[in-house]
Image (cartoon, rainbow, N blue to C red; front, side, top):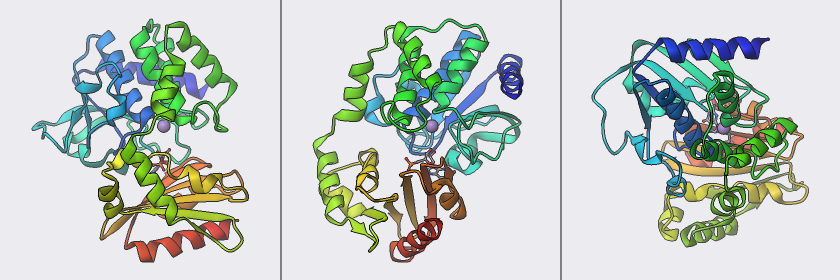
Length: 324
Ligand code: 5GP
Ligand code: MN
């Protein structure tokens, strides 16, 4: 069994080394933050030294997570050292670690734990499970495999990863195993409904303002199959919103009846745009994202594309159209 072999190799990586750096992808989501913390917990169980770092701040909404305040924000505070042993979670490719790569020593050994089918296996050791709904699901398996006993705090983190990456146990990645895992986590006292309320239902006022403004500019192709919205820096300023407030906007164009692909274009600066892609099922958006240097899953993918908004929007829409 490949999975068992990869679990064994990952266990060896964790037990045989010490002094780890734990990183996740830039602009971390629920799964990235939770997986970072779960790895931190695992290392603390083994009595290992570790530092958790992200390129930027973690979403405020996730402040309830155990040791969330221990994830260092590299954009706010430099870390003047390098690490020989690195664990990357939820990063589909090496670029996704962002600026934290500055902390990797030359020739650093890398453990790559991820669930993206587009992951290219950039690790020294790879634990890649493309059918897992979330990286948190893989970490649950690794923790079980290593014979460690979960507690409520870490069960809450793992549940958070599952909840957010399955859109509240609704997306097609919600397998029987996901539900069985969630069920086990609830046994540890995880407050499922409370987390759904906090992470999936509640909106801040700036978030709602941003959504309203973005939807005002919603576009649809003539055949009604591709729809998109754009968010610029001015939109964020107008709404008093921050980056994490863009989460979920891409679902609105996707949710229109008849739409096959919903897109969100977030202007990063004059030179780059972040594209989020969501598919109703017919189009493999991971493939589209890959053609722009990104990646992801069949139904949810993304890419950072160099160029202006005016140039990128028609290019991406055309690429999606070719897949229809
Ligand atoms: P989102 O649109 O929510 O940022 O991301 C959707 C999915 O695509 C997530 O699984 C995310 O990890 C992946 N993804 C988003 N942006 C990128 C990117 O620039 N490169 C790669 N490889 N994957 C991405
Ligand atoms: Mn994930």
